[in-house]
Image 1: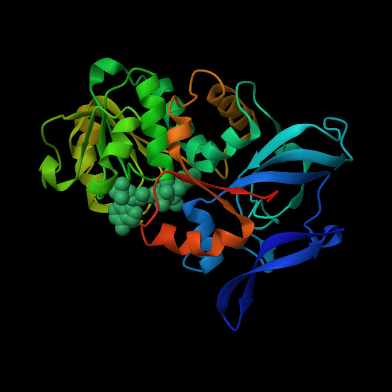
Image 2 (image 1 turned 60 degrees about the horizontal axis):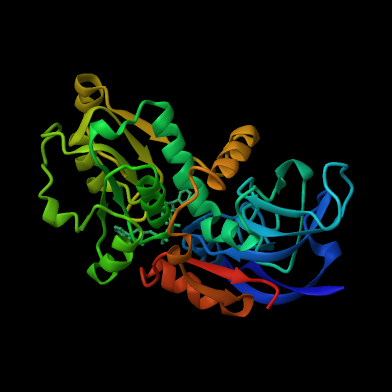
Length: 329
Ligand SMILES: NC(=O)c1ccc[n+]([C@@H]2O[C@H](COP(=O)([O-])OP(=O)(O)OC[C@H]3O[C@@H](n4cnc5c(N)ncnc54)[C@H](OP(=O)(O)O)[C@@H]3O)[C@@H](O)[C@H]2O)c1
C-alpha cells in the first residue's frame, strides 16, 4: 500500500522537502501504525523542512511534530485498530518519521488516546503550539501565578502558541496584554479574549534591569531584548515562561528581577515533556484549559500538497493563528 508524505532530504548540504509516495516498510519502526487524519504546521516544522533550523537528526525523514488519527494496527495491547489517538513531540519529525504523512508508525509509549472533550481535528488546531501554551500555563499556576499579580504579557501574540495562550488565559479569567508586531491581526487577537493588544514599542518598556512592575507574568515566544525588558517589568513572585526564539535565541539580563522580586523563569520544552505530564496536559486541554476560541484560532486548513508554501509563509511572518493539514484529502 503506498501513501503520500512530505519527506525531507539532505542533498549536497542543502535541506529539501518533497511530496512523495512511500510504502509502510519505509516508515520508522514502531508498535502502532496510525492512519493520520490531521497534522499541523508549527514553526519548528517550517525550520526543519526548509533547513533554516538544524532540527533533523537524520535524513531522509517525514516532517511533522504532530499528528492525530486512527490506529490501523498495533502490536501493543494498549491500542487496537479503530482507536482515535494523537502524538506530539517525542522526537517525531526530528529523528523519527513524523505526522506530515498519511501514515506514521510510532512506539506505543508515545501514543495518547484522544482526550475527552476534543475531536481529532481540535487536537491539531491545538497541536504542539496549544500543548506548549498549556504546559507553560500549567507550570505558572503550580508556581503560584494568581490573577491578583496582574495581567500576563504574551509575545508573538498572533502566532500559534500566542493565540492559544491568550485564549486559555482568558478562559481562566486572567487579563492579558497581547504584544504583536502586526496591527492587521489586532482584531483577530481581540477575538481570542485579549484584554489589551499593542506593539512592544507602544509599551515604552525600560532599558533598566528592574523597573515598575507592569505584568503579573509573561509567556514569551520571541526571546531577545523584548524578553529581557519584560522580565524587568514583572511583578513580585511573577512567572516568566520562556517558550520561543522567533526573534532570537539570545537573552541578556541581570539577576535583579530574580533576587529582588522573586521572579521565576520557567523553561518550557514540549519535545522532552515527560509522558505522565504530557498526558495530564492533554487531559486538561479537553477540560479546564480548552481554549474557548478554538475555532477562531484555526485560520487555514490545507492539504499535504500545500505544505511547502505554508512553511515559507510561516517563517516570513505571513501566517497567523494555526494552519492544520487534512492528510485524508
Ligand atoms: N519550547 C517549546 O517546546 C516550543 C514549542 C512550540 C513552539 N516553540 C517556539 O515558540 C515560538 C512560536 O512558535 P509558533 O508555533 O507559535 O510560531 P508562529 O505561529 O510562527 O508564531 C510566532 C509569532 O512570533 C512573532 N514573530 C515572528 N517573527 C518574529 C520576529 N522576528 N521578531 C519578533 N516576533 C516575531 C509573530 O507574532 P506577531 O506578528 O503577532 O508579533 C509570529 O506570529 C517559535 O520560536 C517556536 O520555535 C517552542
